[in-house]
Image (cartoon, rainbow, N blue to C red; front, side, top):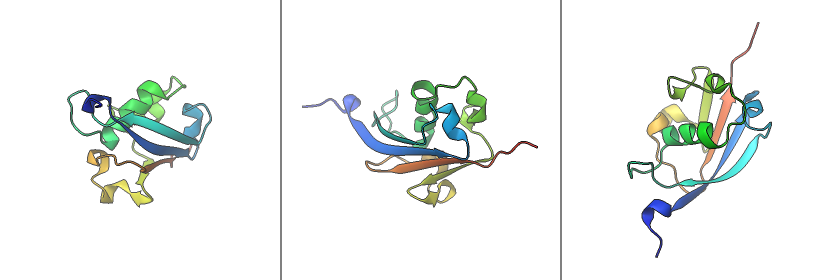
Length: 109
């Protein structure tokens, strides 16, 4: 029998609008992430954002994705094709099969 702390959730994460450069220039990632955070609470999108920065980000410029530990303003997050503002934002609890899409709307000029 598997310990709950060892349980994983299979999700997909996609990056668009240039964010993929922070993640090995790869737009699509099929991931298994812990079902719980370090405190034993269900994994949320907020947990996922931190997890992506710690385990998947290959570019040192994390400030292009997060500021102050939160998703940077100007980056849209869609949870299963729905704006995360309609899905509890970073408090949304991850479910098996979820697709999380991050789109940068940041432009220079």
